[in-house]
Structure formats: C-alpha cells, structure tokens
Length: 128
Length: 160
Image 1: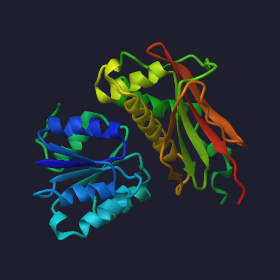
Image 2: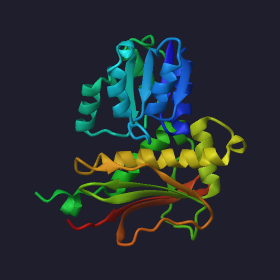
Image 3: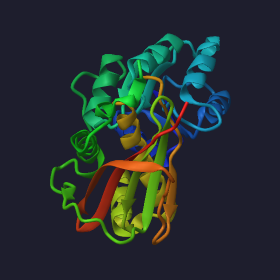
Image 4: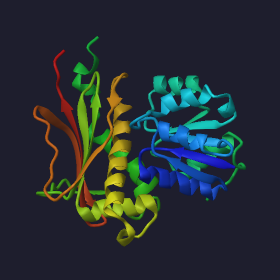
C-alpha cells in the first residue's frame, strides 16, 4: 500500500509519515497540490491513500482533491483531508469535492489510525 | 447582523488555553510530563516568533514567541528527534506548523467565512511582530521545559 502525504510543512509530513509507515504503508511526500499531482504522474501506479492538507501555496488541498477526482485513474484513491479547517462548511466542501474523510489538527497517532481503520485501510485496533 | 462586532464572540484566554493544551497533548507533551506551565511573565525578548493572520469577518493574528531553546525543543518533539539533531530549518518549519495549528483552531471559534493565511516565522533574537492598531485580546505566557513561551491573539479592527 502506498500513501501520498501532501502538506507544505515538512514537520507535519514527517509526523504523518511516521504514522502511515508504522501502519505498513510506503510513504511519498509532496509540498503542495501541484507537486502531488506531479509525483503521482511519475509513479508506476497511483497511491492507495492521499493525506492532504488544505492551506498550501501553489495549489491548495481542495483544488488537488478536485483535480485528482477528475482523473479516472485516481478515482480509487482514498483521500483524507488533514487540516486545521474545521468549519462545517469547509468539511462539506472537501467531502463534496471527493475527500473520503477528515482529520482535524491537532491529532494523535491513534486518532489518525482510527480514521484509517474506519476506511478499511488498516486493521481495527491497530496502533504504533 | 453585525458579525464579530460583538466582542464577546472573541476567543478568551480559556479558549486559547484549551487549544494550546490540545496541541501540547498531541505533539509536545504526549506523555503528560512536560506541560506548558503558565507564569504570566513576559520575557523582554524572544529568539523565535511564528505568526499567522486570520482575515475576513474577523481580522487578527496569532503569535507564538519563544526562546531558541523552546523552539528547538518543539521541533525535536514534533519530529521525534533529539534537540541537537534539529536543524535551523526544522525549527522554523516546526514553529510555523505550531502557529498554523493554533491559528486554525482559533479560526474555528470565529465567525464563518474567515480565512487563514500561511504562517510566517522569524528566528532572530529580539525580533517582534507588530501590527499597528491591533489589540492583544488573549495571551498565555509561561515556561516549557524551563524555556519561555508566549502565545497571543491580536484583533485588528477594520472598517467596512
């Protein structure tokens, strides 16, 4: 399983990387939405999971979700927004654009893993 | 309707403390052994400052100001590294993410429609962020691992 981590903060990318690698994913990082699309384009197969921040320079997370969902090859990719944007209207926008789940910062490793378990990407009860 | 014109809608010190506690519990003190101990004492100068602006119906700024030791400690905690392994770039990035998370959670307490900017970090002794006309409405100052940390929220009144 491959996870793409999209966040302009290297710190947050490393935090998320620790979690997903602990769950057995191969992790790939990108610093914004455009870099993420470029990274996907260079892959032999698309990621199974994308964990996407909202507020990023160049291309934000919502735009990335919309563009990814427009590509038939990426329709099976699970997208989780990982962001401080917690307004109900923002969550609705992200889900409407094609995100499957939403993790609000700050989060613990356990809460992130619980979300991945809900999505069937890790076994229930998994932990680091 | 007057939006945020009613100042009682603004976050309080208690609200800011709840947000900060969540951040500490998630990243900086997951074991509960190194909390931010509030003292109310504001140091004369800081070595690192992270700030983020909120715009829209409410306009203001969230600021995290620390010593270099606290900023380095925060980066090390975020990254699960030893403080002496942390680079200056790590310190700036971690401080930016810290203020981004706090700012995002502050925004969630403000009227709908506010936008969060990207964080701005300065690592330089004595550097301060100033916004003419902005009023400090919340401030938490204390010690974390024996190093000074101040987190503040500023409101900037704008006409129209």
